[in-house]
Length: 338
Image (cartoon, rainbow, N blue to C red; front, side, top):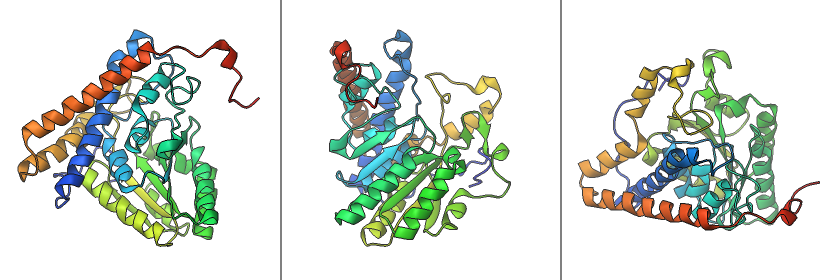
């Protein structure tokens, strides 16, 4: 795969050989994430979600694969595009939707919105809107794991743009030096807002090779192949638990909708409709479904049942959010830094 040109699309179905139970778990996770975000997109214009929202439709394979490779007590941190990671880690769905609605039943009691999600019970330790901001925090969590000797893993997601922040280099170098149990996941979707890689980084640079030069094992994979993502993440996590130190995984993928918001933005000129359509043909959900159907590991009825189950859960979460109260004004300055 050409990591600099998103128009060069790898062909083929997902990697074969995954046990049926794992493949179905990956597929359901992706379907659930897709159902959540498509519902957010369809209802965003109702003006009840008053915060910016960054959707990861098209990128679900990475979240699902990494989430399945981690334990519930492992730590995870994310970015402004956090819904998929939160859900794949086991975050509370009704609390997430309530948060986006600004309700007191939200995971941050309605104060954080879409870009600031936390579910400590699921090990999801937070997401923020500042590019690269959670990378050093995840490294700090890795240090706490080492000091407490708990055999957990601290996982952090970030985009290709975060590798252009100074804190990325400081954090990765420190983690490598101290052999901290940190899993770095770079979701390379080729764009930082509207700027492609070619105007931000030198020709020929490969992000995983750059990370590897800082002193840790680094690999690259197809982020739209959820089975491959899971296999790579599982091996990385196993190595970290054995004391091998931090690992870096870069996955290429593509977001379908606009950088921020529920719409499509191919008309504004920073990417082409042909590029978008080529990537859409590699929908990670459709590819895994075709693989499961093709070798008899799943039936059409099973897949339809997955979709129905996911949508019913999503509808319930939106109903919960709609019925929940807003925070009392007296809470405006509680739980915040002053």
